[in-house]
Image (tube, rainbow, N blue to C red; front, side, top):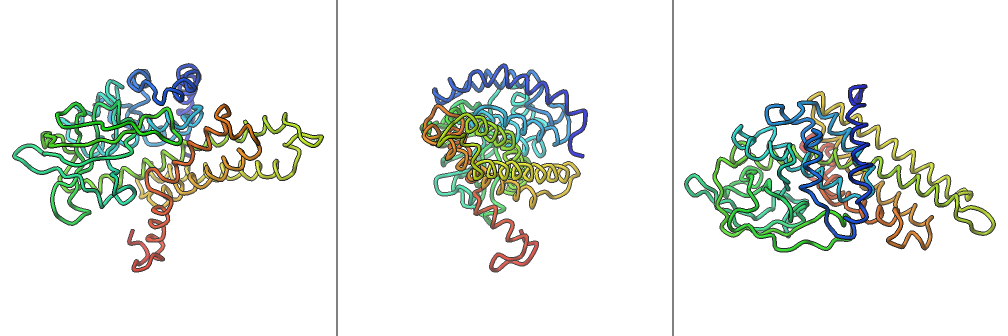
Length: 388
């Protein structure tokens, strides 16, 4: 069993925090196009939620990954997608590789303040010409004595305008593309780091997303996470937690939209009866609720596999793929039942429609998830089963 009675207290504490400290402000943050990350993260850090499964010696709780999944699921109750995503970047996208492979020195400097909520982190992988194709990144970190000199740029960087440091994937040699990359912690105030612009997005409006340039940025090699040339491998491992976390964060968000749609269609009248009384509506909502529950079962199973220390690539990939596809189908169907009101920005279903679209893109597009699965099945042209 993934969750036990030990998860109940932190779950209730997080639910209480979301209700008191986040949801009352979501509309304001959505309108502003940003939320106060330092203020909110500090509160979460004080409660211990930014390091549930991180090492105790650096301020974490030292718990297993089931607690991170519990947190991800509860964050789905936030009335937007942007804030949960930003929190997830801090806990399960920018810091897992650092926590697992970083030296004690680099973990003290970057992981400890991230866990405490004293610093905001972001993850720098995607580039204008290399989104899901991570091996194609062009950003270079040239060796110069005890330092790296970094040149290049990153795009679609969540928390990018507010971050104190970035977990940067860069090429540290001219070797084979899967063995020439390293992950490096780069303070955002380092000379040559430029936040070029804050992106204007379709959804996730309360989350700031940046384009960042690096012009002869000099950082010490001791800021590197783990071994030089292992960055691609570390990032692929880190992706599994990110993808599973992202899928789990969809569960309560999907259920909330189903419930909101039931309430709205029950009260909305047309042709002498409620919209909900039409079989096509209540049958579709029943199907969607079933799909959410099936996704939950897949995520929980994947969580058990990860906690057991086994390879979760296949199940995490499936969960990420299904979460994105379901989010698109579910929000589209529900918006239709809201009619004209669903097309306005004043309803929760329109926000969910915009926000959920990113799940099929971020952290690896649906098509990449399918490629990974086909490699593991041996059905991708030129591949044999298991060569993922």
